[in-house]
Length: 270
Image (cartoon, rainbow, N blue to C red; front, side, top):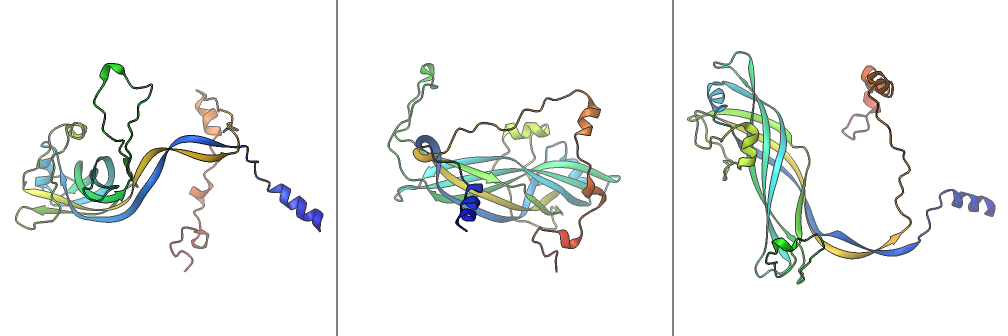
């Protein structure tokens, strides 16, 4: 019996701890997650696209993606260690326009803007950090203390709905409170129309985010071994048939899973 216990223990033996090492890493001091339903976000269009929107009779949203997020972080007075983080999200919104003078459908893209504020703890530090990578030719006055860094992780937004409003039919909620930056406007070929137009498009978006405050610290961690790659590099080939032979046969495409095979946790087994 003892021999069996010893054998079973050796099969699942973990790598031996070799040493404790000190590393320089970004430690998460505080974080929060949010699930936001952004209802009736106005979509802005370039000047060349707005006439198509004005002549449309209906609209349907295809997808929404995040172009960029602008992050501004400031310490909160009289609340030491806490920071206010202002997030400005810029969404790329793809739409189909129907009706009016449009024959069939017309696909257009615009930008929606959303502002969000969170408060997180980032602690305090009174040191300056320099490195050998800093250039002596561009010596700038350093901050009196090393501030933490704010980061945001965004999942692919969920495009929920879209509606078309003419100027007199409805006044909807979320109007963008900032201009579109030039670096984003250049993706769409020109300046955006922010003044009221004949027709306005509003979309509703589902958004999942994680906001974190991190600091650069030295940490002591256990080390087992170096991370030596165990996988060999695959040499690419210019022969398309050789590449095709490496692709597995798509069995699931021909035989879709049954309801009782679904493991998505969405009530498929009811």
